[in-house]
Length: 127
Image 1 (cartoon, helix red, strand yellow):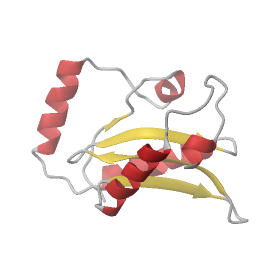
Image 2 (image 1 turned 180 degrees about the vertical axis):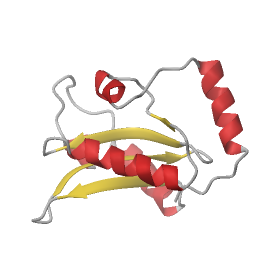
Image 3 (image 1 turned 90 degrees about the horizontal axis):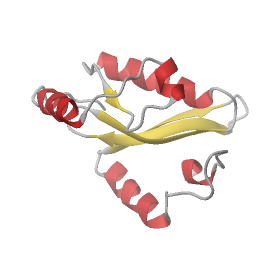
């Protein structure tokens, strides 16, 4: 919900609708959708991200921040967690300048599908 509610300089409105939120809540209840949250010392939610475990590959959907760098901390925590579970990559959907500074690179569809297939064969348990 915070991803939907947090204004973005380059967007008006949000693509994250109530139906979308409800669907992802069900994904979460079934163990397929996950979030990483960053809370400050006062107990306020200041950043985070969410996405789906696609059979051993985390596919990020959206992230937000209310304090500078909070979403970056969420992403770095996620990367470290995924590495401990044997994951070697994650899907950011879109390579932005922000993701490029963190080492992301764009790959074509065929390479993505090959990586996805190879990773799913490993039966990784991410969460």
